[in-house]
Amino acid sequence: MKQQTAREAWKLLLLSLPKGIGSFLFAVIGLSVGIAASAVIIGLPLLAFVLIVCRRMMESEYGLTSAWMSGKKPVDAPTADHGGPAREQRSLRSLLALLTDRRSYRGIVYCLLQLPAGVVCFTLAIVVPAAALAVMLAPAAWLIVERQFEYELFADGWLFAWIGRTFGLAPYEQSWIVGGFGFLLVLLVPAMIRMLGRFYAAWISGLAGSEPEAAAVHAPASPAVAGLSGTAPNGQADDAEPASSSLPIELERLETRLAADTMRS
Image (cartoon, rainbow, N blue to C red):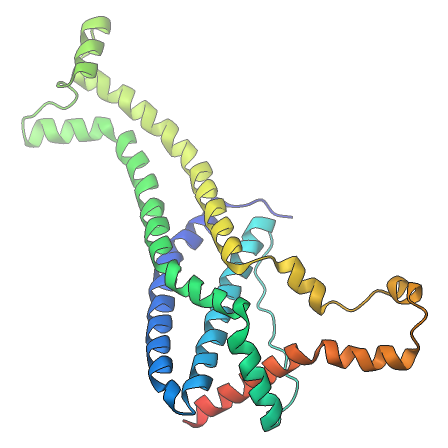
């Protein structure tokens, strides 16, 4: 397992703003058009398409942050394909199930709130390294300001005045002390970036919800559990399995149908 790198965390923080802008615009435009067109047939499939795309964007960002937290490389999971479009009756049932499932709206919340979160993360990702580097270059700043503008930095203020009286240090010597603190800050920048990355990953994880529960719903029963419940015959177990997994299959079929309708339009 690789260590959580500050470079990957910095990349996540920088990309959070363009992703937030794109997801916010898509969610607002899609919801506006879908709600406006809900009076006709095209409105509900369009809203379902917006929900599916927003959920996929949230799951993609959750996969990136989870891979960084675990120290692994993000892998693009292939989309499952369960055949062609479903029958009209099943497609309508899946559409209603998608629109009434409150977990489907987590993607909408992610798309709407990712913009302000992206602004904060992007700003901190730029300001923290820039501020540490600026403080470290305090001696160079003193020389430039003193020669070009004939103004002496680190000469005003009670703190610099007290240091000059107590230790007998000139403003130029005090600039080297400030530069030393800046050097320490530069050394701490990777740790601060990793901390910001953990906050961002926790934010995405809180929006995505508890993944173990979803995995437990779709995971098949283990042979030990099946052996304990030996009262049910094998025929009943075979009949119960398609019923439990029918909703994910229908949702995938709905996504395939909506994608095909979008390509045709």
